[in-house]
Length: 412
Image 1 (cartoon, rainbow, N blue to C red):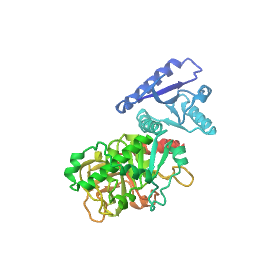
Image 2: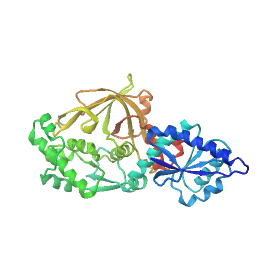
Image 3: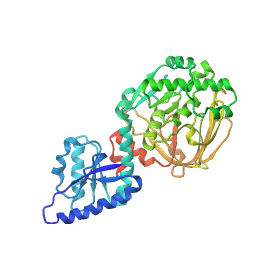
Image 4: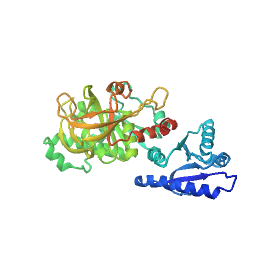
């Protein structure tokens, strides 16, 4: 991925060649650090993800104004700390702020600059990829999700996402067609789950969702799944597990913040994530037990098919996850219609569990960097989202872009 670098300088003496040579070496050194992440600073790039303005000297402010009408947020200003580059950058940043355009200054040595550019680049690509996405609400949020409401306006204004409302009646009509699409892993499912009638019903639910996805051009959805228990004695757990594996963001209980969080994670990483209940806090070990009955199949090292925990009906997924580093995160839109209260925590999966009285997939996550009581003080609602790897910096960079508060997390 290319980043278009626009170089601005004003030289009042005969040192221009010297300054250019020195700054060429500076850019080359940054590119050496970016290379491993397939990033590159390129002048006059025609395929760049975004622009970065290299303020090479003082006095470049008036040159910057020539670009003002074509600016795209956030404005990224690069300073090498020489030749009055930094004070000029500060003046430009302030000018942008006065015109309600978020701007960030990146400065320091080449390694640090590359370390800030990497999550910023991933966040900008993710933000742009979200724009215009359609996410479906199949039914309303479950009655117990009293804090997990997101308005259509907030979804559009903050994320650029269209929330598409689909009634449970339309969903049921699709299920009742009993028309089965091609089911991935069907032979494995038959080997793992012996009740053919229940498995067939779960496949009809998956097929119905696939038709709704095609009809409404959905990139993700959330389902008021507990209503299916009374009508069909079945669940959407298996359907959601397959959809997530296929690259369609899919959550249960009509939980819109969880759906949005999972979709952000997919935009940042291209990977699936796990919607789970924080079920038990072990303060002695600084661990949290997370559990739920659906699990993206491509996140598991192995899995078995059992029943849904609360009801004993349908099909629940008991997945075994790979031990190691994860990020636990959640977006939360507060009463001021912003993302100030979002949370992302780095942890490690220590073990898979098989306990009674919890949902089927169960993992213990240890948070060595955080006190559990501080986590409890955060607002994240009923569920949290778990993905492999440490994406904390990327997550907060994206949140900052979406929230138009870039300097909060990118300037450290």
